[in-house]
Image 1 (cartoon, rainbow, N blue to C red):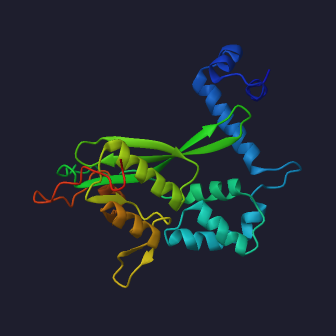
Image 2 (image 1 turned 120 degrees about the vertical axis):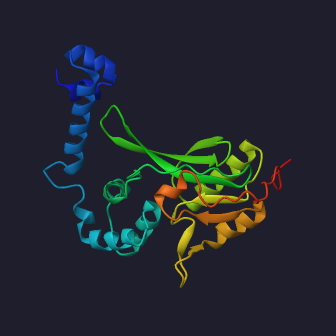
Length: 245
């Protein structure tokens, strides 16, 4: 019996490996290859991304501008006549999203207590028993000094999800830092000024003002893991949350 047939019956990877007498890594590799083959074509041999083909030049331009939020891109494509689905769009965007890989070792910089926290989203791919693929989105918030973290799964990377994640993290960790460092997420950063400095969304600025922190954007991927702009004279962060009981 083929591996794919066993997986479609709902068997786990371990059980499939036992029945076909192969290593689990081999079984997982076969599942990934089967998923890739299915994702490329519809029934009848029609490519699933055919509807996206005429919009790829536009997407490449937008991604070159730093916009990788699929919800935002989908809204823009709908206005241009795109009739395809979100799954195909996400697959194309994910294939061109810059990898978050450190090219060289970096020096870790610490912050003083309360100065800064870092927040971002992590994509976690999940292959289901029917070989369909689902992308889980994990909101990750980490304090720069203690490395205390708060993580939550979110339905998307929209502005609402960002603000919900930060609100929950402030309450869970018991305070608000002086600064919150993020990447140039399109849900938070809507452009740049004449000096190349980020222009934040009005809703995010209002949220930051309400909680009393300064929004910051990492200069590059390597500075976001541990911040390098700390100062011994920086004041400690607040220990209470506005509006919290």
